[in-house]
Image (cartoon, rainbow, N blue to C red; front, top):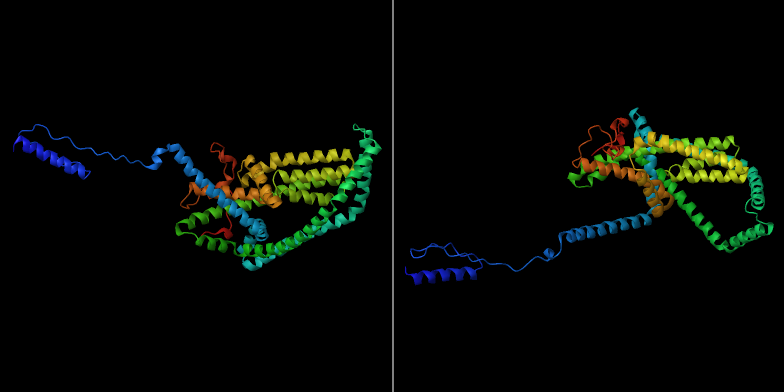
Length: 432
């Protein structure tokens, strides 16, 4: 082969390779050519659209649209709960009451009693306890209302005298003007007060309906709680059933511990403040103690507000000296709760940071009022247990010590010897 033929062969091969956008086949040097032909390099000028943005912006955009979807889903869920509040609120209350009474019901079942009979017996006992307490409170209120009215009138006169002779030095004309302005404001807002009374009547009807719905739901939660949870778990994909069932198992244990601890703390608060009111002969000591007991179910905030009501009643009925003593009693009880009861009793039920508790209560009150503040902390405790369990045990295996993860502090450096093992979970939280 001559030199000219070799050049023509190489040129033809390179042309065909360029036309096909592939590299030419390897060239074998002839006897008259010492080096092989250089390969043909084809560069694609096209680039992906995402390559034009920095990686940080692409990551932020991916997180942003997912966050927007989560917020939208949460908003729709809250709207749905608001529309169904007459059903959702009784069911939530029934869940809390079931957590309170379920250990007693399980104990009766273990002793051979049928589940329906045990649930009915617990329900009747709870009704007798509630209505008996309400009857005692109402009878005390009725028996002391006349004496309270007299004391309130005397207290108002004493306050007026203090305003006149005290550091404010208000004259009788100024006091009369303020009283007249208050009466005029009351008259101007009479329509609003009437509307509020009608709304109260509607609310009473809703409360009665919700009460019977709570009783009906509570009975079946006590009787069939385990089977209801198993049915709900079977609706999930097969690989998610065991992890979800066990997360619910531990979350239920946390809820039971939280409710029992809250009831004990509320009882101590009510007993301490009620005993102080009774010793100081403040009227309505028993109703005020009951109010403190109910308010203590909202941690941190509830007992403080109800204690302030007790101080106000003592101020109006018995004067400023008694009010100051009641204030000291309320502060002492709050210190006992914050430094002894909460770490000793509540700390074994849930491990939540105080900031998380405050923010949860604030968010619950903003979203759903008093009911939201009531269920915010137990909901946070349940979610804390479920999320921490699923994060460490995604396959659904039990924890080594059979203890709910939510009762363990988030700080790994905290001494584990201060925690005692929790009680064995009940039969109503059976797994799938």
